[in-house]
Image: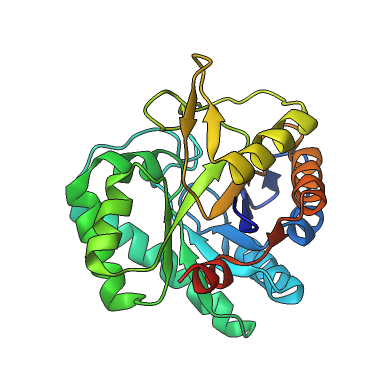
Length: 260
């Protein structure tokens, strides 16, 4: 049974006067322990980064950079075919933006979590994962990389000695391989069912797939998405259910330290 867990969410996902999702960041931030902040390529702008980083500092939430493909129109969920070096340069650029806003508000960068299609590409692309992790070893040696347990990213990070956290996706479906089923549009979920799924994963170490099969799952952090319809209700239900089950919530860095 896992009795200490990180709870993370993607925040700052808007641009200018445009925002995605029903719930404001100000209501979601108190529910979580780690925040993945959009860094400008799939969503986010300097003003939103500044605002959400400041919120993370005020609530004692772990600060994370959430770099994505250069794809504002498609919200970073469309695959872009290009060289690994170009993608990693984009990641460095975005991580640097979040780190600097963190310095402005006195909060250190805790982690890096690629967004959407970039996350899924790194999961299967060993060349990209190797270059990304090698670069992080130089630029952000202490930053935790967030990824799936079955991903190439996890394998590469472990080999290289980069801190790494495996995620469990509360509001996404799993296939029998243990990968999430990638979707550009996600419907509304029953918050109680989402919360029960998380508690079961923590207590039993399993998740039910789209075929109705239970598979084992390993993770240190639970993710829910701010752009999923009903995100606030999902987050509240997850937090309440975990606490009722005696599972404590803490930032990813704390969870890794306790697991060491």
